[in-house]
Image 1 (cartoon, rainbow over the protein chains, first blue to last red):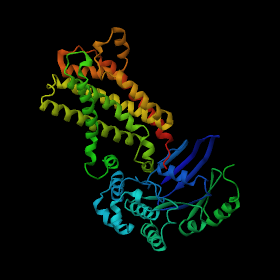
Image 2 (image 1 turned 60 degrees about the horizontal axis):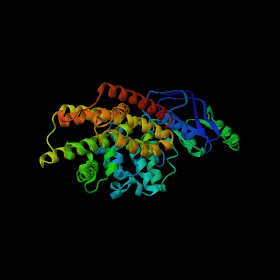
Image 3 (image 1 turned 30 degrees about the vertical axis):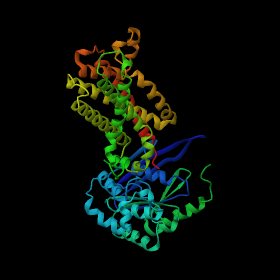
Length: 222
Length: 241
């Protein structure tokens, strides 16, 4: 279970403090799949980074009873001057699993071939995304945080990702962040909508979408 | 280990640079001092004097240098909950410590072997002095590293500061050579105590060292607390890429 209680996040900007997230409450049970909808800049990624523990809330509490992944996104989370293989080793060490038996999987899945032994900063963005996804699948979590990662690569790779994540791991909890209602509809049971730092949760997806569309025209940076 | 590979790559002599670099520094400075030998007006062997002096400078100066801005270049790793600000600092501090220590030991052994310097009088004193100085450097690193994350000015300030501190650090003189008013001032600097102790360990009764390890211990402790508090502040506000 993951429980967010009254989570507030503020950032300092040149024009004073802005409140990105304002008293957020969220509960995620084992195996539950929740979508978080919001426009660009609504605070979705901030929220997911706080759930992962990479950032700390300004106030409020986050309890995690299950293992939570880092925010799986396009790139990020890697060290550019290391090779793909070294990045894999690093991740495995940080999350306490063995490395050597994971290499074949990553090699095959990422389809990087000999580039796996080149520094990540020389990769194209597509290669980076393939590596990111392959490495993300190496460590097993109870809950995956997914930051629009799926919209990546060509159609075939896309399909492979879908299978790995939503077929093989369909018993896990997931938090999906997107501004694309279709994607959320496909994979989630519930959805929450972020508007101006406030989050409203809906059990019914259709109600959530209506609410989202209703507020979609509002400016984020009021 | 990751830090090692990132910094030195997987090519040629790679991580050997870790101690070759400070070694070249010390060697160069030692050579210069030998050539300019007459200038220092004491009968201490110049090679040993330069070696003990310059190695200590590297020890306390390199660690903070490596730590300022360390978070910036490792931001992408902060995505992982288990990677904390302190881990990044710690890895850089340990690496630098290992490098300068290895360089000091290698050079000392090599110089002794070729007869350029005499073996030290009291190894234990040297080790104590070295450890205290390493502690000082590590604490200073946390402080500088933490502060540099909050404002860029610190990174800019650190370079001139470390340069100005170098001649004052005791690397190039013994406190005993100074007039007594200057002695009082110079002994406010914690690293001076350590350098003095190290010299006493090396030259024995040939030098009259001024030091107070209790003072240095307290100073180190304060610095450590300050450093850790800064790290805490930073880790609360750090924002991954």
